Image 1 (tube, rainbow over the protein chains, first blue to last red):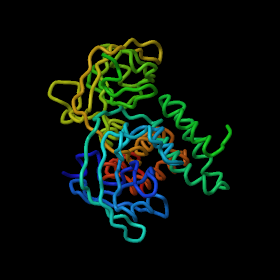
Image 2 (cartoon, one colour):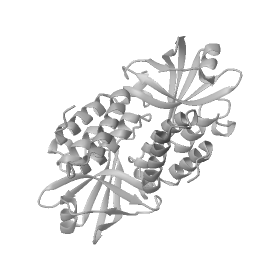
Image 3 (cartoon, rainbow over the protein chains, first blue to last red):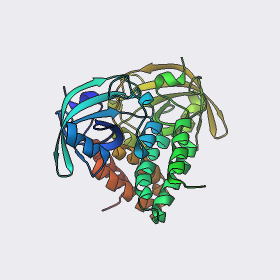
Length: 186
Length: 186
């Protein structure tokens, strides 16, 4: 069993982290992998519900997801029960998930793969709309806490143009949701 | 049989087109899909070897690929024989391929799916390094014919920073190749 079996590769893997504390929390985070053929990884966890939860129960479920709407919702709020498999910290639309043991040292979570499962092996031709939706989200979460930064707003709107041209309806819907979350009128 | 069976979705699908004419040609192109549950698609083909070839034999093989180095090489030159399955217009590293019949009307190729095959169903967690490598390539092919445009050069280098931070070695190698093809020294 190794990280690569579940879609992880060297570099930063953007996944949906599910953690349990007082509440079930969902958030997109980057899992840093230095050796995809090992069971060890890291993540930077700044003060957040995700970090509070792993402090309490030392577990993190990484859901490998390629759905633009799931990324968008979980960047701004928690995903509702309807997105999960019954009684599992696993998203219905996940391609795979990994259960990690977490040791927190300052802002770095040291992760060890305990168990993983491939749920649905599907693939998609490269879509620039999806790709830049992820970029738009990165900038959107920064813009949310720094509304004065016009550069961020411009970048989000620039990526929106590519999404209109190249994306499927799901990318277009996800981008509309970003604009709504940020209260950007265009 | 429908486009969606082979990884195509509505929007623009960035694939490696293989065409046969005097020579075997490989080029990344965008296949425009309006109904992923059909067998029909389109592509804009500007004057190029790809277009010359489909004029001659009316066939295009779309290889669904997620390898950054294959995208990079084929954006600048033809892929060598060693990248292909023996005696087939199919790349070894393709997840799937589709054989299309092509009818060219001015700059638009009207495509009809004749046959397709899933070769290797594998998936990867979202990697921003890969995603922006595709953006860097789009800008690189423009910069190649418009060297005066400093904005394009800046964007390529901006995406390079994300690749350094988030990509795997394959994305980093692909980006180095882009810089070499463009003769950009950093």
